[in-house]
Length: 75
Image (tube, rainbow, N blue to C red; front, side, top):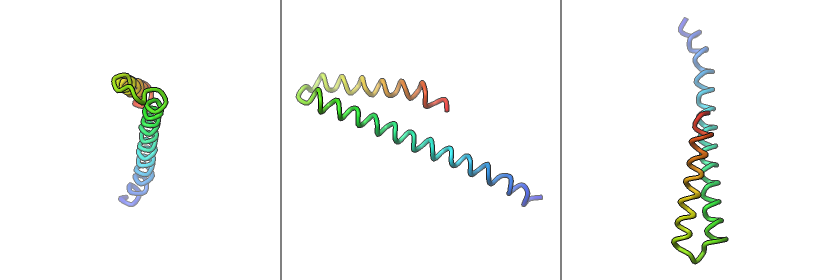
């Protein structure tokens, strides 16, 4: 009886682990994309403008956070 329970529990645990790893990779790629956008905007448009650059960076992060809570959290 216990071996049957163990056989049934193993695939479920494996599927849960795969889903967690996939979610972690997706979140890491999302953060990497945000960093690339922030650095790209900084270098292309606001290289010598500190306050405008700070405001743009805050705005970009807020947009990414809004998209994260709207789309990624519900999966």
